[in-house]
Image (cartoon, rainbow, N blue to C red; front, side, top):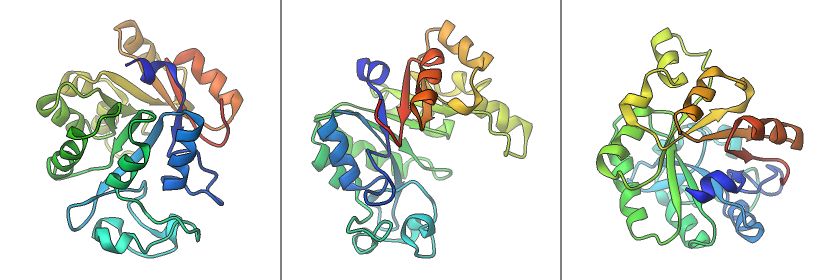
Length: 237
């Protein structure tokens, strides 16, 4: 886990969301050139392929309507990001581009139907020679990797989650319950809610903390005091 703990990680690649969109091949190319590990998001398309795209809906990053989940691998190649020449990439394209040159932190976006996306992702990763780890907000996804691919380093994303309606869900995702459910190798924690007693408890129990997302040098320095490593964007550490 050396890279997870010691090298700052570029959030959705080295992007500026103006000329270089997040989660684009160009953002990942720049991360490779700079030597930073890449954090990215994966979702399952309608035809079973995996794309790299953060949002559920297309509007913010493409100006189009509808859900990315309803698109096919052929259709997304014609959907451009922020009006640039960069299309929504397939995960296989990203693997080919990075080719083991820097590690990858893969956030799995999956709220339901656990298994199909995870199986397809595992099949792609089984032939990949580079370093990587997986993480998710959904503890059932993290548990799936614990049960089906325990050798892969897995992380649980967490934070305050004040917008969730039920106290039970908030408690689960904040970290009170999921450690027994999925036994993560690390916790990725929202730095906006630091310091947090639960973060200190995890570190005392030997579970590393990766903070997300520092958007300035000041935020990065503050997060580094509480976390073992930090995910960043908008500047370079």
